[in-house]
Length: 291
Image 1 (cartoon, rainbow, N blue to C red):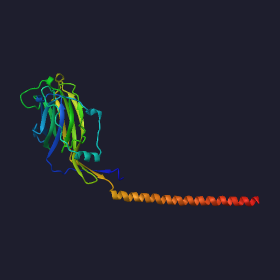
Image 2 (image 1 turned 45 degrees about the vertical axis):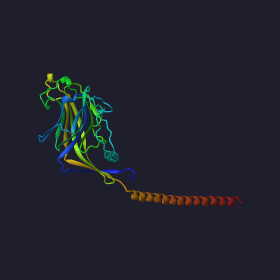
Image 3 (image 1 turned 60 degrees about the vertical axis):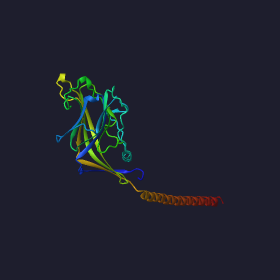
Image 4 (image 1 turned 180 degrees about the vertical axis):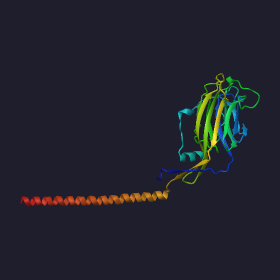
């Protein structure tokens, strides 16, 4: 019990009074940066265009070690690893490709402060539904194949594994929409030493479709993240025995083994003595009969 700690899960109403939520993103889209726009629209009707905290840098698209989300890939940290990883804060690394003259993809990274309500973060092309300006991006300029290196809510802990992290999707057409439906749950971790980690977990469902206008298809091509903030908060408390309790239990265990061994030895001695007496009596009777 000392080495393997239990975890207690409590589900409580989220009583936090924060009105804003930070969304951390690091996404590479296989479309050139000038054609892309990033926006957030929430249920309150507020619209947030790409801010200075969110950057677009030309790059080349590579899958690297990413996996398809449909592969149900899972790489989870246990509680102790999670707290340890969260303490090793590192900012999102800078882009390796400084020269964007020949880059056909765009890396979008940074964070957005949004209202803590249901909303939709979308990456679309200029002139298609949500884009700003008068330019209309040609279909052949759009390719929403993308790799997600980071997508999380709240304080950024780069070492924590989220469901969308290190995943990618391949577009089968220029005009294709990728939709992610996320359910966000505020989560509090309290370890055995009362160290507290405040973060957010989320589950995700993915859906994609090709928008074929020749067949009456209606929609906006792009990448959409629709997130719902759950009113329930999860509190995970790590329970374990202290070292003193461990020593007391160990002493009791050793004492119990010692007493049991002593009792077993006494029983064995009695049985051996009885056998010796029986053998001695048999030998005595045999000698008497022979005389």
